[in-house]
Image 1 (cartoon, rainbow, N blue to C red):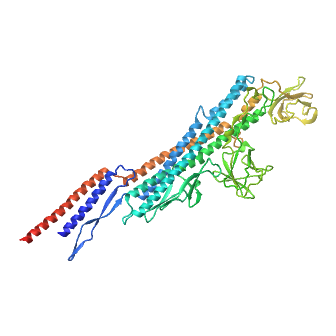
Image 2: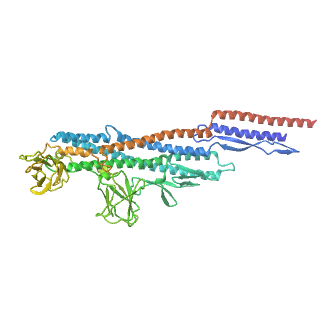
Image 3: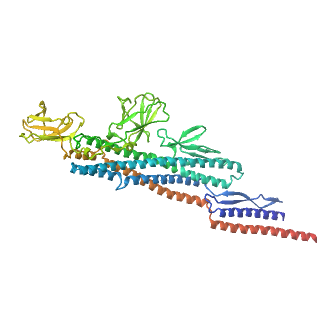
Length: 628
C-alpha cells in the first residue's frame, strides 16, 4: 500500500507540473517570441520484490522548449534578406521618382532648353526669344541643382540611419552578452531557463533585421554572434561596439568599425543583409553611381554648350563667353595620409569621362589607380607632374610635389560636378546666336563656285575676323590673300585663321571668295543652329552617347535596379512568411491543442488522486482487520 501511495503521489505531482506548464503556455499564447513548452515524463526505477520488479511511479524527465535552431537560423537569414530588400527598395523608389517624372524630369527639362534655343535660331533678333532661352537655361540649372540637393539629402539620410542602426546593434549586442552571463549563472543540468532562451531568440531576430548574422551556440549554453565575414560582435559575456565614424576620404560618407580592445576594425565592406546592408548597398550601387551619372551629363552639357557658344558672336559683336560653369573633379586625401599635398584634377576629354570614382595610391615610386567600387586597376599614363600629369579615363591628375609613400586619394570625376553648375550669361544680348564671320563670292566671278562656313575651329585665333580673300589662279589652284599656291578639289574644306570653310562648284580663273567679320549680323542664326547640333551629337562615352541618351540610360538603370529590388522584396516577403509559419508551427501555442492537453492532464490528475484514495481505503481496511 505504501508503494501504491508513493506511485499515486508521484503521478499527482507530475500531472500538477504538467498542468502548470500547460497553463503557462496558454497564458503566453500572445507573448511575442514565446516558445511553447512540453513536459517530458520519465518512468521511475522499478522496485525488486522477490523474483520480479514492480514499477515505482513517474518523474518529470524535463520540460522541453519547443523550438528548432535550424529553423530559427533560416528564418533570421530570410528576415535579413527581406529587410535589406525592403530598405533598399524604399530608398531606390525616391531616386526613381526623382529622375523619371515626365514633366519635371531631367529629360523634359533638357528638351525644353533645346526647344528654346531653336526659338532663338528661328528669330535670332528677338530679345524675348533670347530671354526665354536664358530662362530655360536657368530652369535646367535649377533642375540639376534640385536633383543634386535631393541626392545629397539622401546621402545625409543614409549617414544618419547608419549611425542609428549601429547604435541599435550595439544595444542588442550588449543585451545578448548580458543574457549569456545570466544563462551561464542560472543553467541547471536540464539546460538554460526557457524564458532566457526566448529573450535571446527575440534579440537575435531583431539583430538579423539590421544586419546579416551568424551564430554559434557553445556547450555552456551561451551564444556567440558574428557579422560580416566572421567579425565577432558578441563573444560569451562580452560585446564589441559597432560605430559609424567619418569616412577615410569623405567624412560625410561614414564607415562602420568594430571597436574593442583599443583598436578599430573597418567592416564596412564586409557587412551584408538587413537595414545596414541595404544602406551600404544603396550608397554603393545606386546613390554614388547616380550622382556620377548626373554629374557626367552636366559636364557633357557644359562642355558642348560652352564650346559651341564660344564659336558664336553676340549682339555686341563680341565672341560668345562661357554659357555655364561646372565644378571640376574632386580629389580627397585619406585621413591617414602623412604628406601634405592634394593633386589638381582636370577633365581633359569629356568623351572619355566615366561614371565612377577612383582610388589613387602612391607607394613612394609609382602610382596605382583603382576603381573605387570594384577595385579594378585602371591603366594610367604619365608620371604625375604638372608637365606630365597622370592621364586616365579622360582625367589629368598632377601633383605640385610628390606625396608621401603610402598616401592615398579618392578622385571623383563627376560626382560633385553639379554642385558648381551655374548659368554665366545673364543678358539676352550676350547670347551668341550668330557666326563671327560670313562668306561671300565676289560679284565679278564668272564660275559657279561657292563658299560656306563649316565651323569655327579656333575662336581664340587673333585673325579670326580679319578679312581674308581666296583667289583662284586657275580652275584647280588658289591663293590666300595673294600668297601661296594651293590645289583645289570640289567639296574641299579650308582652314583659314581658325575658321573652316568649304568650297564647292567650279570656280574659274580670277574668281575670288571673301571671309570677313560678321559685324552687325543680328539676324544670323548659324551659331544657334550649330549649338543645337552640338547638343544633339554624341558627347559622352567616346562621343557615342548623346545627352538625352545618357539621361535615358541613367533613368533606365535606376528604374531597372529599383524594379529588381522590389521583386526581390516581394519574393523575400513570401519566403519570410513561409519561414515564420514553419517556426511558429514548432514553437507557437495552439490553444485548441493546449485545451486538449489540459483536459487530458486534468483527467490524469484526478486518476492519480483516486489512486491515493484507493491506497488510503486499503490501508484503513488493513488497520480495521488488525483491531479484531
